[in-house]
Image (spheres, rainbow, N blue to C red):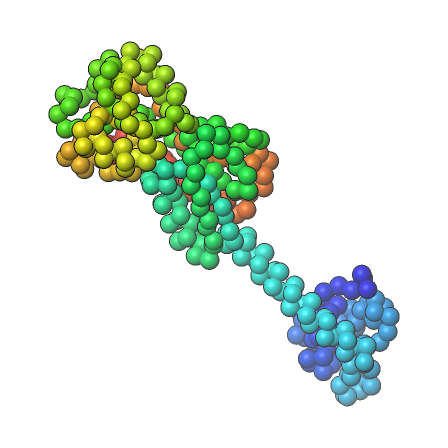
Length: 302
């Protein structure tokens, strides 16, 4: 039975539906002798005749063995059609993709990536998860956005550099860049001491600033609310500032820092050596395109 092939079953179904080898050959685009060869191969595989051949103009008749083979053969052919359709949809970019993300990317970059993916592949399933652990791992994710290295055997593409800027209340500092030394002893609100925050605070210290942290929160909107309330200033990456639309808020001012702390790197990671699905491969392309557009908007002061 391992020698039964789908083309043999397709020939059998065509003969049954058309009533003769000749009409089956015309339907399949074969010669009649090719159909006869395929039926003969099927009969050898199943160990008996699947058709009685009366000859002349009379239609062929299916045998009891043939009826069994026909019933299961139609099921196999239908399954093969479903499989072919599923593979075609997969290769066209449908299917499912699991993406890990974090706050700033979720607000600024990811919405555009999701929108373009869904515009191109309306039937795709996109699953997102947002966490900001100190040591993120790819796990079962197809792709992971993160602002730095990721543990494990991974590859990545750097999407953009995200500079740190000072957000202060209106009038707290003169317009224009602010020297880091001006922050020494100044009250600030900041992220918890996870991810890149310790490195940022060390960079501030190297620049002569030891600000007085009066509040910590992992939520950007919460920090900005405290800046509006006058509790202190905040040193935040540009993506967080862009995502919160700070430039449109007359109560807040954004200043460059001199010297500027090292920018964080926004990266997109995946497991090393992994063969991407067409959907994941397209997501990487779109994320790169969107990040380039976002970086260009920063250069134009948007």
